[in-house]
Image (tube, rainbow, N blue to C red; front, side, top):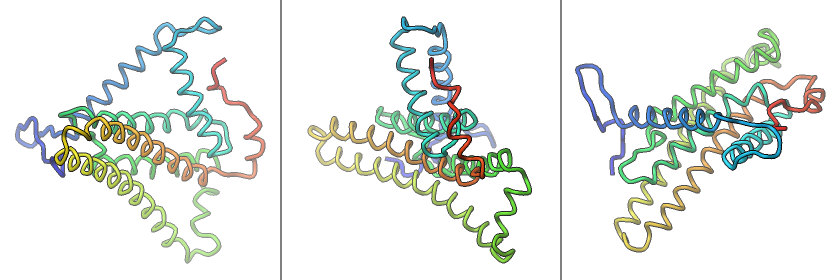
Amino acid sequence: MELNIDDIIYWDWGFLKVNATLLFTWIIMTVLIGMGAFVAANLTSGTGISKRQALFESLVVFIVTQIEEATQQKADKYFPFISTLFLFITFSNVMGVIPGVHPPTVSLTTTAALAFCVFIAVPVFGVSTRGFKTYFSQYVKPTPLMLPFNIIGELSRTLALAIRLFGNIMSGSLIVAVLLSLSPLFFPVVMQAFGLLIGVIQAYVFSILALVYIASATRTHQEHDSETEPSTLEPE
């Protein structure tokens, strides 16, 4: 098993290289876009919906509920970002059980990129909700001396987010590989199921942590009013 899938090169043309991380990231994005287009085709309202649409609506309701419970706000603004994170990480981890497939989340470059997206999203959502001055003034409260410590705190939690996802997925992959090599006839099915479970859990944990960070950045004195407004993403 390769410990660093960034070193697995499939195509090399001078300074242009396509490694396993990049290739499987493209594959997963293509699969997600294709599935989205397939599910979105022929959506209907009313009671006579297909099983495909029912499954899709159940997933939407689940994500919307998690967002609103974590942020105590309407989910509409956060749904595209959080659902993209959750689905990408979930599919990346789940595809890792397929022989010959290298999940991009086994690469630290992928988890760091995802954590960086959260790092950027937090102030973007914070500024859009509270305003530029109000949001950034929290970094110098209760005294300007807290500015470097608050910045370090933002950077450290971003690093922790990347390392946590990378470490958990990498360790899980290593454990499965070791057990399969020791007992290839007994462990395969159990370990594949275990890998699926861990992959979904880690995607959920990453998304929830991103929500917590965003929620802390967007909290205002008007929170109570936001809680009472229904989300427009709830299916009728």
